[in-house]
Amino acid sequence: MNFENLLVAIENGIGQITINRPSKLNALNVATIKDLHDALENLDDDESVRVIIVTGEGEKAFVAGADISEFAHFSVEEGAQLAAQGQELLFDYVENLKTPTIAAVNGFALGGGLELAMACHFRIASDNAKMGLPEVSLGVIPGYGGTQRLPQLIGKGRAMEMIMTAGMISAEEAFRYGLVNHVVPQAELVEFTKGIAQRIMKNSPMAIGKAIKSINANFKEGVNGFETEIRNFGKCFGTEDFKEGTTAFLEKRKAAFNGK
Image 1: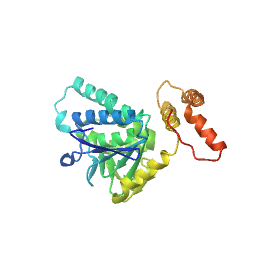
Image 2: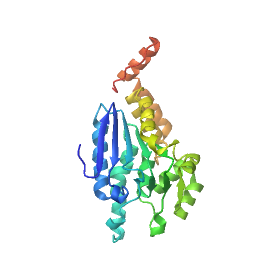
Image 3: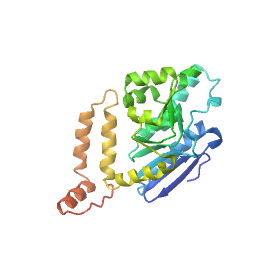
Image 4: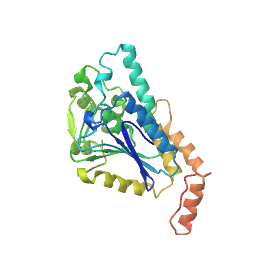
C-alpha cells in the first residue's frame, strides 16, 4: 500500500497508519482524507490485521487541523458537502470499523485532527499533546463530528466550553476529562499503544467487532442499543470463535481464535 500522504506498515498483526505531511503539521486535506479511507479499508479487510493504530509523523503533531486553504472560499452548499463527504468517507467510517482502531496522539490534535482521534475507538496521548476544536475562531463550527462526539466523551458542559473558547487542553486535562485513556512520554507512545493492541489481540476478533457495533448503537438516534446487544450476543453463539473460546476455557488452555 503506497500513499502520497501516509506511511502504512503491518507487523505482528498490527497495522499502523502514520499521517505524513510534517511540513503542514499533518493537516488533513481532501487527498489525505481519501488516503486514510483507502488505507483503513485495506487494513480492515486484511484478516491478518487484528488492531489498527493511527498516529502522526514527527513529534509536533498528530493532525493540526484541516487544510484551510482548500475551503476558505467555499459557498454554503460547498461547505455542507465538504462536511457530509468527510464524515461519510472517514470519520463515521473509522468509528464503525470492525477492527479495533486506536489513535496514538503524538502532539497537536486540533480541529479535524481531534475529530479523527475521537472517531477512533479510543485514544492514547503523549505527554506533550494538545487538543482542541478552534473552529469558531475562524467563523465556522466543527464539521467532522466534533460537536457530537466531544460531548459524548467528556460531557456537554466541558464540550461547550472547549468549543466556545476555541482553546486547547493539555494531555493531562484530556485524561482527567476522559478524552484519552492514557498519557505516556512521547518516546514511549507507539510501543505503549502496541502493548495494548497485543492485549486486544488475545481475544476474539469476531466478538470484538460485535462489541464495537453494540457500543456504537447506543449513540445512534433511533437505534435501541440494548436490542442491538441482544442480537449480537445471540449471533456470537453461531461462530467458530465462540466454540473455540468456550472449549478452551473448559479445557483450561489458551484459545486460538480465527475471527470467524
